[in-house]
Length: 217
Image 1 (tube, one colour):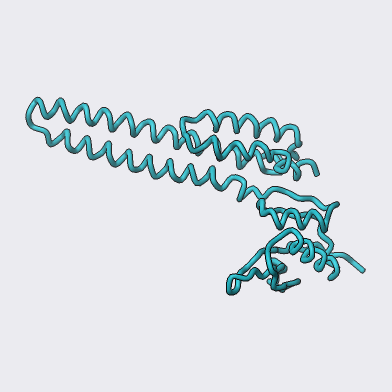
Image 2 (image 1 turned 90 degrees about the vertical axis):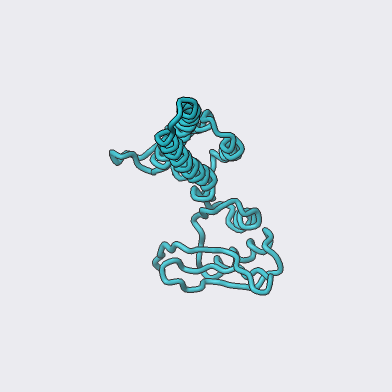
């Protein structure tokens, strides 16, 4: 019989604190297999993946986050298939830092604006001098906040482009080239003056081989 490529979605939902393991066809939302499970362990997911294969859904690969039960169970049931890191979950925390820096930059802009307004309203020389110092401090903090946000924003934009399978000119990216670019970007992002970034980058660096699987194939 002819074969059809299907993109399907698997996840865990809960009913009265009990996990329900389900896989649906992404296009039609047809339920391919579903069962009430006692837990979300590797054994549960292995049985679920084997049930899919029993129904003639032979898996070519899985893109997922690092859910321990799902990944281990899938690998046990489909040892010859590909497992690819889910870029959304891998880099979500970095993009959340960018949102935090953006909010801080807007707050710093507002503080600099308020400092300038208070300076304009000063009347005595002593008050002018005091408020000028306050404005200088607020202005410097504003510049630093904007610069830090801009730098991370640009680097994350480059990160997105690096993970495209093809270059802007339509040429397939090689595994070695993407690894080199990722390591360079990770170094540049890690060098930013932001204490929230290094703890996020460290585990990503350990998973770099998983990030490169699509470029290998």
